[in-house]
Length: 452
Picture 1: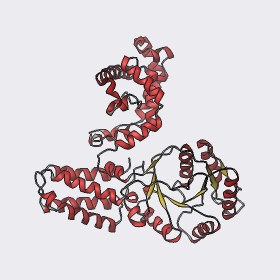
Picture 2: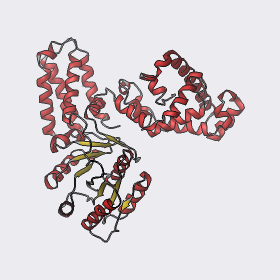
Picture 3: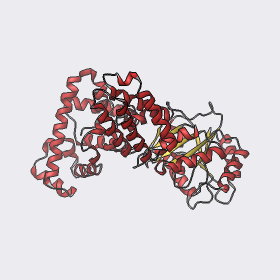
Picture 4: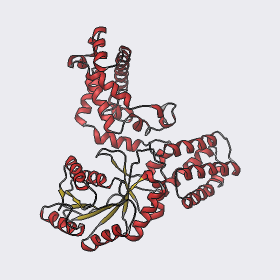
């Protein structure tokens, strides 16, 4: 999970502060020293860390903190606000020309940053919002780059314009814009060539493309796992080409997070999206306030709701809610809930967005592979057994265990957990009555929640 190490260290610092009834200046200085070390280890720029700590410290040693009845909480609030400001304060949307006016987006970045995949992800999102994107293959150097773009584009249902690997990128870009106008495509996404490092040839090519056509947005795609290298790359692209926004990829990995915390301050350009996985749907708008909350272990309920809303079929959710109320929830529903959870990033990812869950003991040991074992057990049941779990007797359970390649104890455990979940959901839905559409009811009911 992104920022895991940084988050753990900051939470330990704040845990010590919360344990004090009053804070002295010495307490604040000691805490800020730990914060400084945590940020530097997360590969945040030294200059940015120095300024950040100074700002927090100046605010924290003010009378409003030192005389507060809950000084620890006040310091956390200040750190949260400053982290949010560091990353851009508010979400910035990708600006597109209105109606059918053509918008040209030039995707830039080094090889390995995930630029081609991100271009397809972005195209898929824009198409869902009613736009008519056209992906353009300008990487004529990297073997299979054009094929990679075509495969990803097919998965999101977006057309690709290519002239093969013999034409020049400038000629392809000009022809693509003409093709888009003739075929009523209002967003052109240029997948430009990357290099292993910033070099003159790459920059010259990007400048030539910009000189040949009107480029509305220059988006830099950077790998969050490269830390300060990503920031240095961004600085060079900004100085030589000019960038209008940044997309950070691989924020779902074990990244130190330095790029996300530094890139906005160094370039002055907003982070527009964050790549949170390998699937072509794993591209999320970047919200600085939500990211700050996640870093500080305060959860991210809004993003959780967004993920649930995007994946859940409302009609199916209503049917599921009715079954929950009547206690008729079966293993088919159970399986469907698990599959929805996987689409939303997995169990550990979702639990990490719930306030307080990040600090729970054992949360980091949750293994999504355990869900695969549960799936194999359910798939080993007959259709009748899935829809009517009450018929599961010992002989049936033995057959299921053999089919799934697990022990009978695992099958018994799953059936017992399922029965407990079914009873609990029926009681909860009944006690909430018609109020079940809000709060947890929204997750367990209409929003198609998780019976685990």
